[in-house]
Image 1 (cartoon, rainbow, N blue to C red):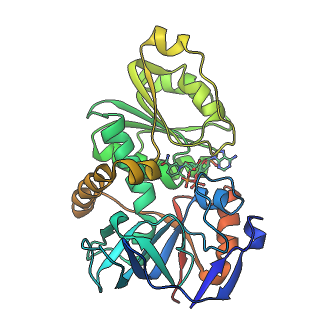
Image 2 (image 1 turned 180 degrees about the vertical axis):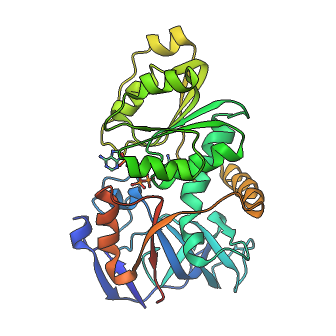
Length: 324
Ligand SMILES: NC(=O)c1ccc[n+]([C@@H]2O[C@H](COP(=O)([O-])OP(=O)(O)OC[C@H]3O[C@@H](n4cnc5c(N)ncnc54)[C@H](OP(=O)(O)O)[C@@H]3O)[C@@H](O)[C@H]2O)c1
């Protein structure tokens, strides 16, 4: 079989497409024929060794995939050979087949194609659990989403609207703001040219929940437009700037700053992940979700896909199609 592999943690340029033999699936693993794999910001960190998980070399990157189960390791009873599945798999998705933790997999709805399934778990899963289980977003509240045209950001806009919130979307260009508005955001702010705090106060007087995959200046603005009893949910630092919090802010304004890491819940509380998937399957069935894939690449061009993401050219998700 073919796959992208790394023999050193020297980044995107060190990735090679090569033939290799995949071992039989181990205990608790399912082997899947990968049909498509989602590209995540985290993949760009894992190939340089900057991600929390550092697989033994050589390895195939690709933390999210969709495919058909073709073999089972010992102790697996939640999936069967022939099932169409998707999920966060840790790594290994940028290849024709992968051995993946079976406990992380969830069924692909019958009316969902492979590319959509590959784009679904991390983005929708993260936003759904963050907004429901962690932030307790309620209908009628104001949700501010930073980086709202990105992989996780756009799904937070869609899910926020599906949950009955008034959504304000921020992004770095007029085109990206327009996309977030197409996906239901009530208001848009281009943070390259507009002041986030000033605009949020003008539109809604403040925000109850703030979903932040960007960090840096966007986070600093959040501290100044969050409402009394508001919740900031820290998702990531795409800006590269990890901000610090003067703790008098949450004290005086009575708000909380929470974190959420999708991967951590797979390891520590996987039931929350599957409750999230069950909730998402119900929303999917209503037709309210329109996963946005801005570009698809063949397996051989995985490096280009990752560069496209890093250059801030992507909107929504970027997907690798392993079988042309
Ligand atoms: N906590 C979790 O479980 C979890 C799950 C998934 C992802 N994440 C994290 O969330 C962040 C976004 O991930 P993603 O997969 O949605 O990535 P993405 O699709 O690349 O989106 C990131 C967005 O951040 C904005 N951004 C601002 N400054 C940037 C910069 N210097 N470089 C790149 N983007 C910048 C970009 O929008 P503009 O151009 O409009 O500014 C972009 O749309 C990452 O930090 C990732 O690690 C966390």
